Length: 373
Length: 183
Image 1: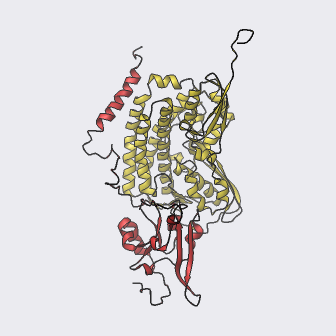
Image 2: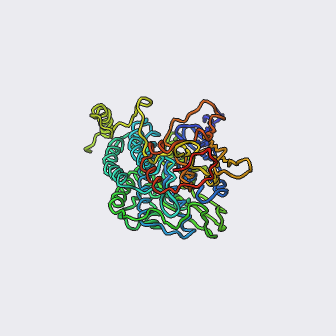
Image 3: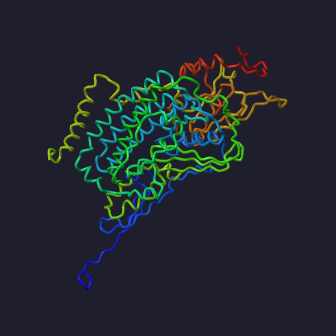
């Protein structure tokens, strides 16, 4: 007690992580707390740094394809696509139509997989301990089985190749994919009913961790996070890479930019993904699944630089590649969405309680393999 | 307000109860339950699934398809393959590996070796029970361990093996009498 009669308080510095269940990997938040409120937050990254970019510069073009699986290990298919797209742009390879459709199918399935798990883990962070995430994992299992049937591995798919994909989809796997897509809306209904109207969940997420629209644009936030803040920006619509201009789908946009909006955007995006999948699986043309002129070995890319970007489930995933015309990239840079989305973590968390910081981090949807590379 | 406080909570509980009770009345439907009672019950892996490379031989192990061309060694992103070509007494290459090692601890099962092999020799196995006791030497797979028959290949990947048999050109190797002639 000071002379004036006011209780002297001190701020408390807490290191959340790197081994912390709520941080979705080896991620550390240095939080300064005033009571329970966050007054300062510093994200500390780099615990999972694996030298991805340097490795790729020492390796043949194809050699880094399996390593891109390990960036965002939930969404290996979209990582593959982003890298293949960048190389194709640089080398001027034309992708056959069937391959483009297969890529869309794989990418949208990856979106379903990623969003259902992201939402499930967000529920876990809120304290709905493991029931929702188990339901999400149960459905994810079907997609993983499909990926294994087609590509040979459940998570590290290594599926795309320059100029197409590695394995064709046969009738059996197409039926499998159709079954998956048919039952997905029922799962979403169940999932929404499970916790969407839950009063505890609403109290925990609404008006928590607001990301203003201006900040989202200025900090170059992308993906569901930007759209939750009201930025209508979807690279599938803006860039129309692949064959996305042929599909009829909408881009859901949030209003407030709070944690609840970020959660809801993912549910709505899954519904749109189901629409794209239905169209893609209906209209998939016959034909070659890989451009025949592309060599597997001694693949060389003409000198120059190129940036290929796609709308990965977490945001804009881009690969910037510089070639000197050789068998290896001269420079290889990844623009990981979750790393850049993390930069506004402090702005979202300030003034909220420490338990809310965990939910806000969950709503950013990070995968540390991609943040640290 | 038509909704009373706690309705969302109760709705959620109805869903969990439905799932809980429903899991007991499945009638053997596999679309709800995923559990395999491993090791009594083993999952049949799809044909495309890949775990670890192996080398195919036709007939006898001496009759391996590998010619020690070292393409897989070169293309392997993790550089886990090590090959030494066998040479006869005069130092002439016999177009087969003397040493063919794959480091299990380094291999990331990407399957690029199987893709680039021009002789259809190296293929991806479906075997997932590959744990070993030792941490170092045991994890280095040597040539005898890697060699598996074409019949085994047909057994794990029937469609792919049939396709390979139909399109494969038999490789010409210098024979020295010990190796059986290729059919």
